[in-house]
Length: 382
Image 1 (cartoon, rainbow, N blue to C red):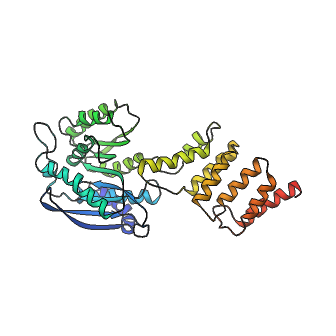
Image 2 (image 1 turned 30 degrees about the horizontal axis):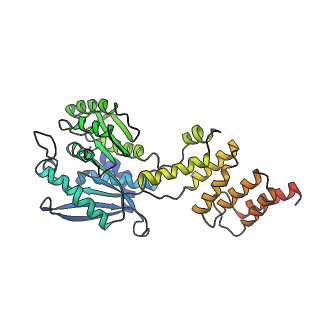
């Protein structure tokens, strides 16, 4: 880990410098003490006063916060995942007490029970009150703290929707209880599990057995991913697992990729525009994020319509474009293409001409739009 983290942090440092990291204290009645937090706010948090953000809770914040926060900032910068509020709980020297469980039922006991309630009843409530949060929450832990995060999944109404387990030191019955919880889950859950070929032998053996159990879960509401990293250790796997977990958890959020375009959008039985609508509705429903449709996603749909000749799809597409990019030529172009290909060339010509004075966007500018209008005028002699 000592060799890997400097390399990882060298990559992420420019992103951490642009994000807003705060150091706060929270006094807990449950614990009877004050705990130290690290909080990374999204880059434009203060400017976007109406925007709300999902929350990532990171246990072992004294060493795990920076790699998680850096990767969240990196992936959200490239719009591969939503911006998130990342909160690290420092546990240096007390992580064993925080994650303690009973020897009879193997559930949080003594300080472990109080720490469990601190997160669920005090910390999350405090964050919701102080910051603009959504109900989409993810929790991350490593070995002892990774085992601990699973106790939230065992509740009837889990507080977290995503669980990132980095080489968990599993308590007895945890594997059975988690498997049962995921099988009976009635709302969307994301579960990530990682080990490595050079992980601590006892942990790796239990994790591999746990993975075999989780593979029996047949629940459409559960997204499960497992990684067994080659030649990584108990510590170095962290640098590989975090991006893998984020990529899988937020794959629906990412832009339309080449695989989606070739295997889905170019199928003539598929409505490209409906695919776009469903994709952004899913982003809103899954992650609690109202996201503007990416310009590149509009262009992917445009190219698919041109190739498949699903001209009727332009009708809904231009309405979405007007809503997402008002004042630009995008909606105007799609509307003109709709009229042009559905038998109304004169109307299309006038719509192209209406683009004069609108903002240019992508490949669309005044010259391009007026040339389209002139081409129609010449072809039909208007």
